[in-house]
Image 1 (cartoon, one colour):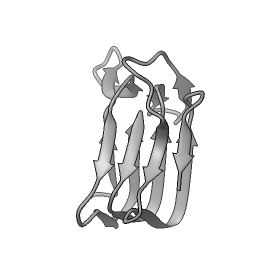
Image 2: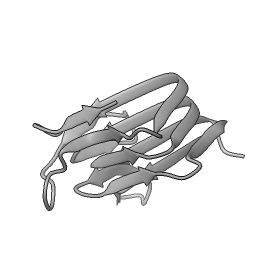
Image 3: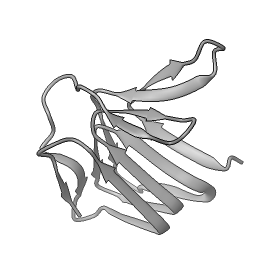
Length: 119
């Protein structure tokens, strides 16, 4: 068992001692489909990517989606916008007809200018 689960398209960044310091997201989409994502066995579920498409439901205790081209510090949980690679998506979060988010607490962060959210 684990207390948290993270799905990311980010590239890990390490400090001088080799400890994981941050994630840099410049591109990539995470798609949840089929039977969805069951995250109730963990305390936290984090999805960190440039965009997320929900074709299935996500169930979690605490759910956090951080979308856009960002550097996410794992030491102090700050999110800093950075330059992306490739074409900008139309939607940062796209919840399709069969998708959905179900959690005690949901945190949504979308930082890329001109990119929408479809809930």
